[in-house]
Length: 512
Image (cartoon, rainbow, N blue to C red):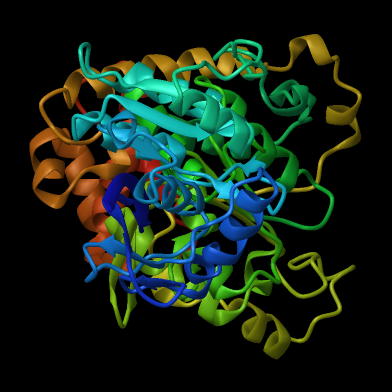
């Protein structure tokens, strides 16, 4: 007897619907699995046997053949446990096969028959809706995630989400009896609007130039490098940048949810529709941890910061290989990982915020405190290659804070809410300007789009030409200056880029 069900396979950021086929025939008792499977999928037969035995179901002494098609696609993970069990039960006549028609299943089986959560449910439900599947059976722990995906399905294509906690509930559903559990509220336990840790820019004393750089970076989604001695507030500023970023659009939020779902982090880190990601890996992070990897690649820190902030503290302390990995995603807004069995592309439209000391001891150029030799300083700074630095839009020096600034009254300091109002206004200008383009922020402008949207007055052009020639700027630096100047003009509500905007953008290129 033959039976088949549908199951999702995650390949990079894509979901492929796999047909899980089972056939029961005469022959020596065995369970053979085929279809380019890794060890996790092959181990499913042992988990399935034990789970069925603990529910009083014994497999008949027949030859069982299980195929996961198409066989040309590698399959990995434990999400195939439940689909394989369902196909086997239907093939031996213990379940009505018609009940599983137009149904997608995913879930990991425990030896006691429990169904555990798996990654990638949100994009799997979206793919199922596109494929015309009407029912999705998922682990109870993934039910909220599956229902959340329905918000992005077109009317008339929304599949029914059925959450189960054990094999017994699945068997009951197959016999027409609903699984007994409390109805899930899709909004429950979802964070709504609270910004991370209650941090606020009003807590940052002084540092007016650095805070202005943070506003520019947030408004245009530009990369920012903060440099200064220890303890002056570099990390404080970076950690508060998410509090002034513009709110996510529904499309951006869906992109983030897909990445976190595939990475298996959605249930652990419930994301708010108003909060962008903030990732801060330690400087000992490996290149693979940043880029993503493994035999079957999953998103790394770069992709987990998609549409948000990637904060790299102690920037020069990261390994050279880790820093060089940033070059492609900062330029192309995506990261490509190649393996023998294929290439995987992950999104990487992020804002890089980095912090560093000016020298190994941290106090240069204060020669009363700095004890570094010139060779030590040169060696320390050479850890950051020119191609990486060239991709930094804004370089801000964070200086020591005076006693007067520390004693300033907090009510007079600009709050994150006030800064965010200006950022939101500039972001709305960009949204209106680029409504016919496939971009959201000034930092995403291509060279041809820069020429079209970055009109500079004559004096500003003269200043830019003089700076370009005297500093011997690269072509990339030239366009990045224009993009930052465009953001400065948007913050001022100006349609044309003026000389003061060019001057400000150039002042933040001191990395040259």
